[in-house]
Length: 308
Ligand SMILES: [Zn+2]
Image (cartoon, rainbow, N blue to C red; front, side, top):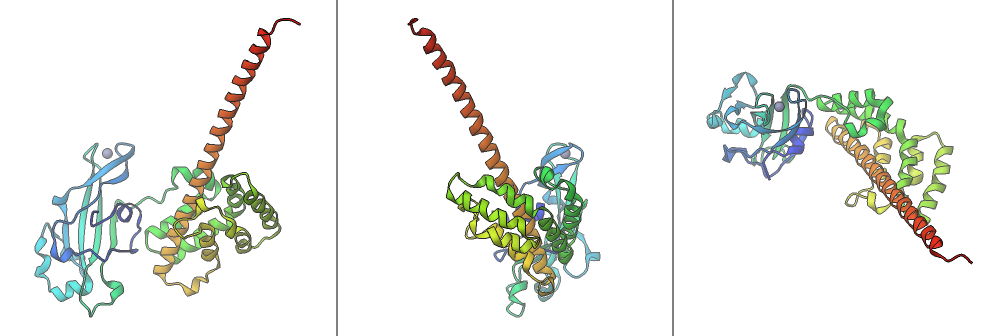
């Protein structure tokens, strides 16, 4: 696996910690970077971007003014300072189609094994700069779903991308509240046609009777089918927690984590609803074709029969 993951470079906003305890920049100058799938403005579409390693920039973690090109021997700075503050490296990625459009990242590596440094601060990377800035766009697949909430989504994403956890969380919570009725309703399509579906639909009647968003989720969260449980997690259980938790009890870092998980969870649930719908449409088309075929066969057989 590359030292820097695709998820980190493509999706993480600024100042959100990506834990990578195995990362040891201090001992290697040839960090592995992944290929990225990013929108290229020149090619007008999603393209593969690869790093131009020759353009890596190394800098002391404390002062960006000290940027130097391709200087692996940054160890020239005081080692204990590196351990304490980490090091910043610039990465330049280029579109593989047009070879012109580029994206630049500044990443802070904290790979310290120094026991005097807090454990939390050891082995992580943080994106501290990105140019051009990441666009706060609404993913294509969420567009039909979040239509009138697009603006709120983008504001949330903008906060997330710039490391404003509290703001991101507040906006994303607003989205859950706005779509919760539709979302819970649409989830019916995921259930098989059995008792579990009936139980869910009965619970939905109660959901409609309450105006309290947290209560709505509480009424159905334990009824979700296994197909929606990610690992041990229950996405509705998570949304319930995310709405219930007091904002004052979370740090900025926690808020960022929860916010990004809300965004992921909405995308995850939406994906499953769409898949279930497509499957249902496919199945009913197949059934009508089969019915039609059988009808024709029956009428042909009828024609073959000699007149009585
Ligand atoms: Zn391009």
